[in-house]
Image (cartoon, rainbow, N blue to C red; front, side, top):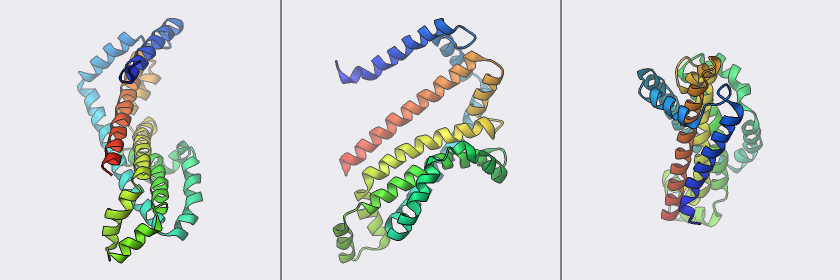
Length: 244
């Protein structure tokens, strides 16, 4: 079997399973694939949908920016300082393991309802894997490479740009792939609780109103976006590693 068609076969298997579950559960618990696609088409033609999609896109974009910049900066600092990294690592691992939903009351008190709370929720989900894996990659850099950089009298910025980042690239890209996807989902989850606009808000409203077709259509859209984002990040990772 050609590996190129694995994704197609997997998608067809999901559609078949979906249709079987629809017949087993009925209209009250699940919408059919065709009904879901029809409802998604109707949503895509609605101005209300695009206004909410814009709010979600803004929250996701800011969450990713803060996750990437903050995660890389903190990870590099902790990776360069052995003592700071050794102290921070168990703390970061513990924070990463905490269910982020427990942070919701604190985030809500600090940022209130709206965009800042959604961004903060996204960053809380995504930044820890970026920090941990960047720190790990920097700490795993061979000492001889750093000694060579010092012998060449490279500035700290040049050392980071030309030595540390390329050497730690595999771990950094793994952290970014995980962190970006988690930041996306974190911002969406934030819309379930801390927003009056956005795709997450529309999804929760559909659940509350018992609108199964709308709920399924939005869930399918978000799932598709997540899959395409993962595929794109994986392709970028492979390209950068090949260039390295």
